[in-house]
Length: 277
Image (cartoon, rainbow, N blue to C red; front, side):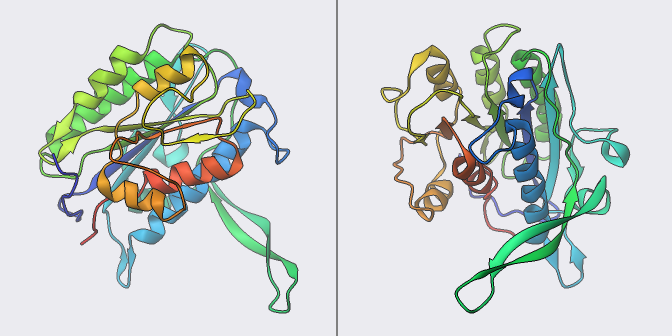
């Protein structure tokens, strides 16, 4: 179980994003945006980055299959709509071809003279921010396991799927730990499904990034999410170290009290797979 399989169009990998859309995601972050809106913005940027990684001179190669599950109230549903609303996982070329819309947004860039100027950029939107109701985490993990079990059966030689889960509240439909363990028992010949968790906490204190144990974590819920998180494979340890984050072989894919920078790092590191062919 080495997490080293080469990723190709014949043997792609999968990324599945689980996004808490409960009412508490309306809370405002330090940057003035709601948690829901900022997570949506970062997820949309991540999808664009995944497309870029798969773009070659002849077009976009389907190295990745990607999906989003949003959960709130009493349901876990496809987070992508329109042409992508039929199934959960889609080849990356289909993601590229079917944004809901492309917005004009303003970005601050270096003017070459030591200052900053505004630049208009095109920003594709696939995933809409939403917040309301409860936190049916068990239902979301169960739905993820159903889709990924079928995917692993169909892709036995592939780098295993990665699940990136973002939440800010406790599960309202039971204890998710045993379901998370079952999800991580799904596997291809190259390894078990990876489950990484980001706790967008409203509590104070410094963020805790990819810890090796739960001693630094306050409360039972953060410790639960830590236990639910997979160890970081070696190539993701290197990706974290490249961002100046201290990790070891015992580090798990969990971030506590994630704010703006941590959310960006979480998505970027979590979507670094093995070598593309």
